[in-house]
Image (cartoon, rainbow, N blue to C red; front, side, top):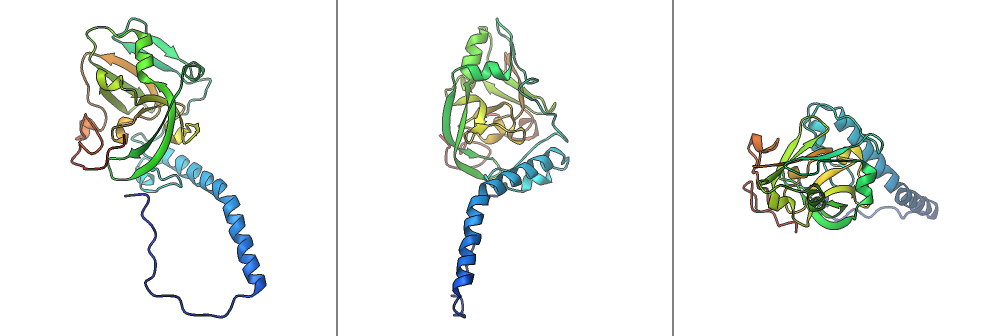
Length: 248
């Protein structure tokens, strides 16, 4: 399922044909130039189409289709409601002294961290050198005042279905973000926007999309895919029976 397999080439050289005339040659150049100009728009249109299709696909089959950025769209819910800057909220609660609800503007006003890492899916595909930007999860935990008996963090999502967990030590790592931007643009709905979890050194199923809740708990509670057999500790190359290169 690797997204970056090069196209095959024929072993035999092409047959020698009729020389190309000047008009045909210039026309070919013009088409090539038009293709270069149109490529970003076509890629964005393809990504938008696949994202909308994935939103309405209860079978998950659209997840088999790559988009121009090398990602595949996955959702475990039949549909996912949208949240705007006006309607989005991220709650931090549980074993904390100061439960808080953040708006998107609140999150954007906090210091932002940018990282560029490979994204590795446990199913095998990888998107190299992907920029993510957002608020370090440790900053939100510190602001909430984590209580001494806390041991883990549970994440819930506004798709109403997906969950994830990290130990408290994992959640405090500097390479774990509440991400607001990806590939140097605001997170779109299909990529889990307005905000998602990003756990850089782990397989991408740990980076929960459509993040809506951060709950500090006294133990790790297996998330959606862990309840279905995936490893709770999902370090790239050291879990799930895989030997991928680390993303860090």
